[in-house]
Image: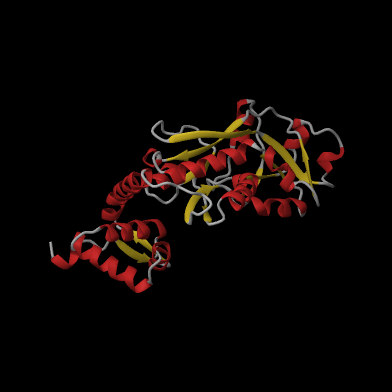
Length: 301
């Protein structure tokens, strides 16, 4: 191994940042260093490991198969090291300056984060929160790669190795524009199914849980619009005859203006909104404190 390419923790941290950000500029910002320094670190990593590691594809730096293979293990090793150090360091929220990354959907962000930020403003004004989008199929990967400190969402089966906390429960309600003809009388199942529907989904498909429930009753609806952006939904419904089913805790946010809510004419089950964290962070006092803040915010809903 060439002497100038000897492995050190700074190089591992640079790799972790590049793997998470997929951008030299973003990785440099994440590490608090200049872009030339991050480029130099990438060059050293390439010489050391004998692989390109990250290849430019469009506007991003995509990992090579070698980088994909070692990325989660490097993130896990660094998380273990950080938690070991943090376990012996007192955490004082009022004096702390740290950034946490939370992966969550639009709906969870709208419901929960105003309360979280309110608690942080009072207890820890130096704490910064970065919220990133959540692809449910990659929730565990976000934690394993160190791209998120906690993940908040609805999951059918969270791996038992993760630290799992139930934050609150929710169920679906219907929304439509206030002048929608379906609202002129109590909404029956036949009347509800006679109109086109919009589907808010993070999976990018045209089928949701409501469709599965309908299928068990040998019924179906016509999904005319599928979108991953919840905030766009009220405006789209206000200018159309589309109907939608959304989490009930969003009612105070979405209701008003041109939008009305109504009970769905079909029974749906409650679901749990959970917070997931890596077991490697159990001893991280700062992260344990953040999880407590999130639990406190959820308990006030």
